[in-house]
Image 1 (cartoon, rainbow, N blue to C red):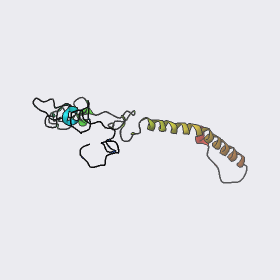
Image 2 (cartoon, rainbow, N blue to C red; image 1 turned 90 degrees about the vertical axis):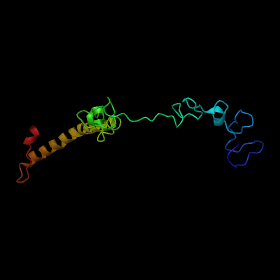
Image 3 (cartoon, rainbow, N blue to C red; image 1 turned 180 degrees about the vertical axis):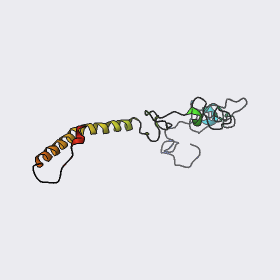
Image 4 (cartoon, rainbow, N blue to C red; image 1 turned 135 degrees about the horizontal axis):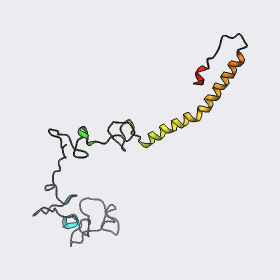
Length: 171
């Protein structure tokens, strides 16, 4: 194939890199096929859609000379030069999305959540797991407190100055 000096494989006219690539179907052309059994030079790539232009097209149908320069849409508020996001508005004028966590007024960054809640659902699940953990150890806390109350009640007969006020527990 054209373009480099890699040695040809025995029995083939191609190097190891080009061994599975077909040559262009145009007579005496040794370029590799791009599409439709043609190399780029012979029409394997589509041509620019602009009138009287034979350059190869880029994505979008036009060559680099005729591609439309897409400028960013600007915020629709008067005198604002920021880029528009949603509803034709910039973030400052209400074009951004709010974080999906209840009560959070911060703008969403990733996955519908703000930076603070960026873990999204995983963060909410972790919070629920924390509450589950607290609920799970509550009986243990009650058992420890009951044990302390019984111990203090048994110690009241001694002259020990150590006492525990358990009035708050009744609340």
